[in-house]
Length: 333
Image (tube, rainbow, N blue to C red; front, side, top):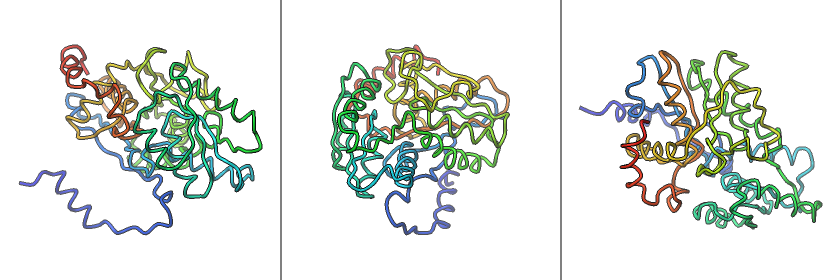
């Protein structure tokens, strides 16, 4: 007897039509929502957990959405014209998105990144032809922000800076796309939205849209539980430069995630759900599961910002089997 998932896949495949697009940026958005089943076993039957798979964006992450919106607004406002170079600080994913979109639209791109971002991210950005300046790895994303400001200050006329940490078009992209998609995909049944904090764009924009549709929806931000953490792409707000687009008063809750728990969840997702993701996705899933265990009913949606192929050479996967063995003993996730 065929597995029910396989049967649904065959039915969906019969309905699928080939899609013709003008450019790769037309593929941004409309990412799928997947139900987390095996890891969610044991929670109340009235509770469902879904994850939005942002790795299906053409640049491989959720950052494609704000990158496109910020560039479009730059062009519309006249701040970005041909002859200017796009520049911004990034921990990787936004840089990939800017490099990809800049290549399609004909704008050169320069990026400032911490030197310790994954090899895969460095190579992808290099493949798009963007110029990269590396900042002190010990200063994290904040060091990249400061160095980018210095470069911009020396030659302001040369550059257009989307400024993802302070540009309102970052959350606006999620207000216009991610929020409506999630609400539509859950038929308006969503009760909790859970997402990690990097720039804050995803949680702010998506949360704002969902709250307007239903003020009872709880918006929960996930952040590292300590300033010294291994969750690439996430910010520990109390010890970081706080993005101008991030407004903590709009949240219902903040959830601290430990690096070890996030890593253990990444391993579980790959082994039990067949979903290979990065550290920030593991943190988001860990938070969603802990919240779900306290509920009798609800529809929880979290965001997996990217897939895990960008992290295979990082500490996340070095010695992962040993970590998983220890995790099975120590982490009740």
